[in-house]
Amino acid sequence: MEGSWTFLNNGSGYDIFLAWKSTQRNNKKNMVRVRFAPSPTGHLHVGALRTALFNWLFARHHRGTFVLRIEDTDVARSSEEMSRSILEALNWVGLDWDEGPIYQSQRFEIYRQAARSLVDRGLAYYCFCTPEEIEARRQATQARGEHWKYDRHCLELTDEEKQELREKGVPAAIRFLVPEGVTEFDDLVHGHIAVDHKNLEDFVLLRGDGFPTYHLSVVVDDIDTRITHVIRGDDHISNTPKQILLYRALAAPVPQFAHLPLILGPDRKKLSKRHGDTSVLNFRDKGYLPLAFFNFMAQLSWSPGNEEKIYSVEEMVREFSLERISKGSPVFDLSKLEWLNSRLINEMPLTELIGQLRPWLEREGLWSEELMTERREWFERLVDLTRSRSRTLVDLCGMIAPFIADRFSYDPEAVRKHLQNGELDRVLPLLEDDFRKLENFSAPEIERTLRERAEKEGIKAAVLIHALRVLTLGRAVSPGLFDVLELMGREKTLARMERLSEVREMIQT
RNA sequence: GCCCCUGUCGUCUAGCCCGGCCUAGGACAUCGCCCUUUCAAGGCGGCAACACGGGUUCGAAUCCCGUCGGGGGCGCCA
Image (cartoon, rainbow, N blue to C red; front, side):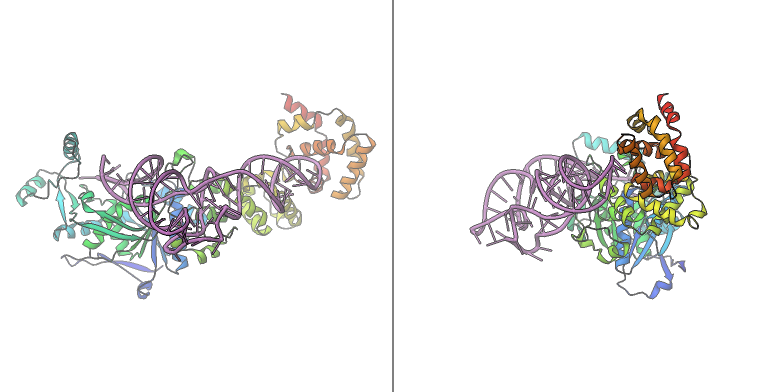
């Protein structure tokens, strides 16, 4: 999107430091504007993704604007690689943004200006206390059994004292001067919330090194981008009063807030890496479909009603509403995702499935153009036949592999169970001959032949069926064997039948 | 420690705002049966919850109070 940042600085106390001039300028006043603001200190994790998802859904539902902002003010812990990874994850899920990404690291001067203007107006003050000094005073206070809160030591400093400290080279942070009173707001999820300012200390806006803290940069950016609804995790509820105070100090309209319940691990603790790989891209790599993942994530804390089905993205956009978000924290339990995924694999149009599967086959070296041309019909039958046994694209890929390539492994358990019967050494060669003589190597013919041979040799058809399955696929699980053999083709089938003793030996050692 | 949020089957949730239709509904998981050459898929069925205690009321999952449990925040991290 076209636009430009203009720095509006008249040198005196002013409130908005930047104005976003763009083609969106003449939008309606009540247009919804939301943002997702991840910190690039790691891969995008599922908790953050859900926040992004709800913001996106809300924006799309209201035909509003979704802004992406990268909160990389912590230069030491942020990396460009993680920023890229986050965009990649959003992309995979299908979340697109209308503005941004805006990088906070490119806006440091703006935050400094904002902080200084607050000092100029007596709403904030310089603090020369070092972390060590504060820590010492805190411990002393707590040793007396009293509650610690920053003691405003630097609020009373005279100009001479400040000058002296500056000359000594003591770095100055800027603290917000929290006024007395109570801050109240109506959270769109939790309802009315009130916090007495005596529970708030004079928090730092600008660090001694000139870098902004989270509260400052968030509020300044949200003001500049004219965010109307701040939708974020529950863990920010306690921070909200501070930020509202900042909005007021900067004479900006306060947006609406909606705090989403935090996602918990199975142990009911805040979901984190300890609970396994919670990175969004991990789910892509495990073979989950974006839509299944989307459904699963969106329905943690949100319910579109009571119809149980897989929703298309469009349907979710239509149904989405903050009012239907529940307040309790959900537990992250993958079993529903697996079910969603397998159902989608089963129900989605075949062509679409093949499109999703293609990158996986390519990676395994199983892809060739002829699967889309002369072997297309065969390939579609194959995918259609195997899909109901696959919960993920990884499964599907593994299922299909033996039909395309010759390298596949034999499940030792399956070999032991189905290839030990001594009768096989005698009957299998006969069956091979039968197969060779078949005019059409088709499922019905194969079945008829096999059953006849079994009866003639006084052996159960099931014995042959199971043995053939293991010999041709290496495993005891597959679609109906006769379809399998037809799709595999006579050549591969016969070649693999001849490996009986070879396979047995392979398992012995 | 202080402050804030939260509490319906194992899990996700519907119902709660606007008390009775709730002997609390659905889905996932689980168990059983059917189908069957294996495993799935599918069909049918079972088990399973209003955290607890007081009120208010003819009547409470729904309203009020308290208790307990769970989570989060209190950084010159975001």
